[in-house]
Length: 107
Length: 122
Image (cartoon, rainbow over all chains, first blue to last red):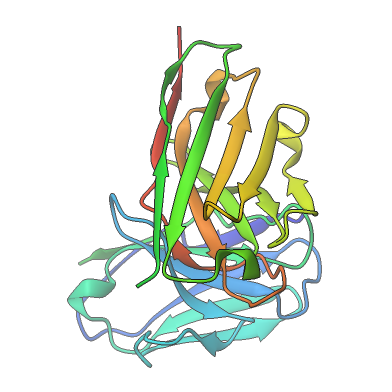
């Protein structure tokens, strides 16, 4: 199975900050990487697919980058509604594994 | 408006069985692959199973293979997950999720239900 490792596991930041979350795959997955946002008690929300394509309706302050094994999700200027848990997800090879999550908290 | 509504969760004893349902609306169900994704209490996400739009192709994560069966009824716009030989480690919120890509399986999901909780305990 492909292991997905996110870093950091949690991060504290302030409104207006720029934050980057990284995700490393244990094997090459090309650009088959997706990012989700999840708030407590809610279903995940698709943010980024194919490593860097912004999902329709998602604010442009979210961006994704990377290919191969190393990926990143950047939020350019944090807004109050961005404090949540973020998951990367590889869609290259069965089984389609998720990272362990990064909790973004208010400082 | 796309909607996915899971039902069927509850408390089951170890070794028991249960069937989850996911009723969908707002899109042409048969044109999209669907998946089940679960989340144990306080834990991360785990992809469980997927089925093609026509229902002729299915896949499962290793830990549920042989115990869970995914199916769909395109005439009723409903997705199912039949679960048997349930274990404590199957305890989770189970989400149904719609594949984003028309007529293909790309295993990323643009719409999700709100989830249904399965608790396996004696």
